[in-house]
Length: 335
Ligand SMILES: [Mn+2]
Image (cartoon, rainbow, N blue to C red; front, side):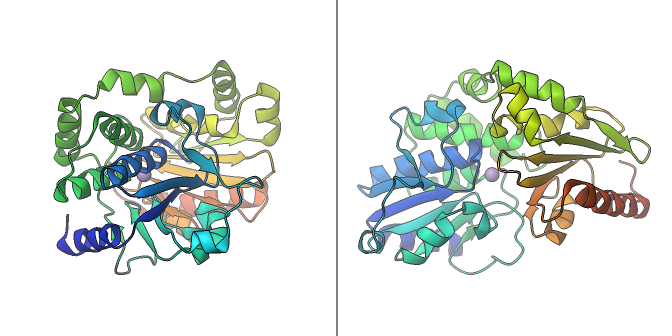
């Protein structure tokens, strides 16, 4: 933890009493985990805290929020200008301010101050005052280090939230940003009262039957390109409707093709119920998919990135395949 980021965080916390926490749309384990961890930390400092997201907390993460603290910014939630000006905003697990949905227009401009804490590769947010560590495994890992530096010992609930973010974002301690520090933190969290298998069951063994049907349908859409090094899966709006699954339940399907030895890049085109098309990219080895996502206004990590497509499916698919063809031809590594 660099002195400058720790200092900016300390100042932000000490200088404010009321906080709103938020994260990206379709929040995942690291998003909800980091919000709940920050919530427990701030409560220990006698701060007032609200958690307000663009999208609801997925059911599978409700064990971190049993009393339903996470609020959704919808038509029923009224936030007055005067009230908002008394809050400071902590934005967690995000590298693109456009990904916080309506929060970016209805909350962000009206709060007293804001700070971003994140671990994605950043395009243009490397500015002073934010806590950005792009080599951290997860936002939860950054939070753990910040809390420890400030002398806070995690409560069991806080430890569970941090453990959740770490196992979600590292795929249970295997993705590239997993380090000795990640394991060390996991050890300390386990000593603090976390049962790893219990968290694993919540995150990885709590899917619905509809999600299983959705996975079967999406996997059936698999196409392989360029000597089977690129896998493409597609999920259309109709697939969600027909399987009665929810959009969020598709979030890990992209990882399946990477289990094949030949597949270097997995591409997943997914349409939500409003018809909005998103392209997610995963890679193994040296191919940097974050660079590809950035060309289309998105971002992420070297091995996991994505963007919202402005183009219809056939157009964006052709563009992505052309870029990947080019990239694979140039990429001489054969890891
Ligand atoms: Mn994350």
